[in-house]
Length: 223
Image (cartoon, rainbow, N blue to C red; front, side, top):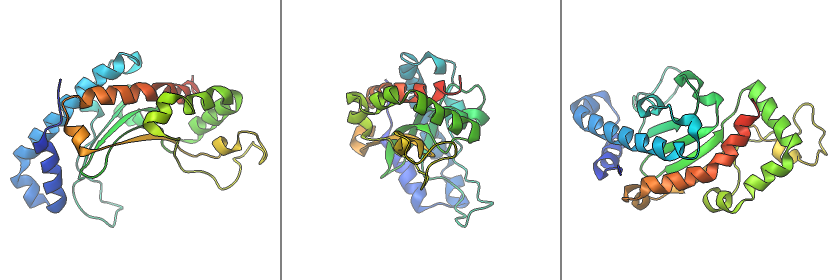
């Protein structure tokens, strides 16, 4: 089974201390080695997820992994590189559409390792559909959020909320606490020791299997 190498973590730590083009170009071989290690891990992770969510079986790790180069055009922080590796695995056929589907996100950053999923600030039509799905099937959604597996790995659903009721829903709606959400997220933090362990990919598979009913509910809203 592929593992995350200590050298990959060390590269990211070093990059955080030396976030400039000269250093990066000088250490390009180490970056390429770290990136390939991350891609190999994500490819195995796709196989793990596909065993319970066949909708992502067509994905290739390279298409799910984000670029390390930052877009600094509209940012006060002009650091040229991200100091983490990230991959978002969804059923979307095009990389440009990955944020239109709930999926499985792996974030590898020293001091902030996590597995996550759900819908981050979904656009208007999807957000409206999710709220309708919750209003129609609140019992099912709350059963997912209160399941032992979801509680074990994620605790509670996270995400930005409106300060008041969304349009089309009264303030006294019985599910107003859920309907006020603008994002519907689940996050599982990991330690560096876990990330470097030989069975980490299996742990990721278990976490994402617990996430699957949550993602499936959110995606079903647009069916």
